[in-house]
Image (cartoon, rainbow, N blue to C red; front, top):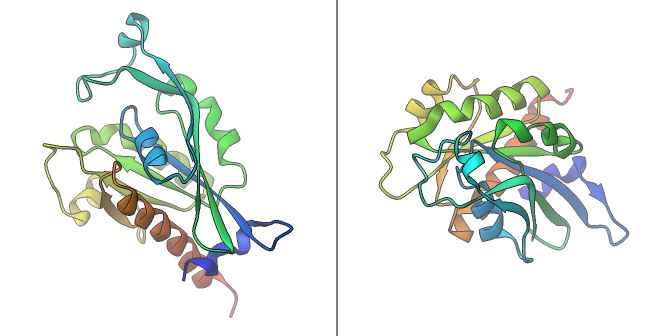
Length: 199
């Protein structure tokens, strides 16, 4: 099922398709954690220690233990099978680093938008970005310890998602759950392409 969507990826000399996927969301929502948990290689991260200057800009109330932040991107890789390899690019969450998004989105198959239900308002900007650029995406509620639980329908309504945008849940720290999210995104893209194909 997953391999059906690789028509948009780049084939290499060995016949393997390389697929680019973005992992996005607001500040401190778990993007770096997700890329690191699922990557089969040591992830590349551009995290920098937060300083007193950044604390006046970045709201850490919901993530008080956060001591570092992504300033450019995260990068990881996961091989789905002999034909499909996913390259993961985590986008920076803070507004001042959003100039990176257009560069990172070039050639991407789709995106995962991670959501913290305690800070849903932080999710509107990433969702708006992917709706405006027409890049397919799925919304994924990161299951933070102690966070309230809501139905997929309630999350979809609160975020004013368009019809057909999947709402999933996972613990970004767990490899298997993160992997299933990526597979769901690829299948979502495949289904969209199939439905829009001329008959």
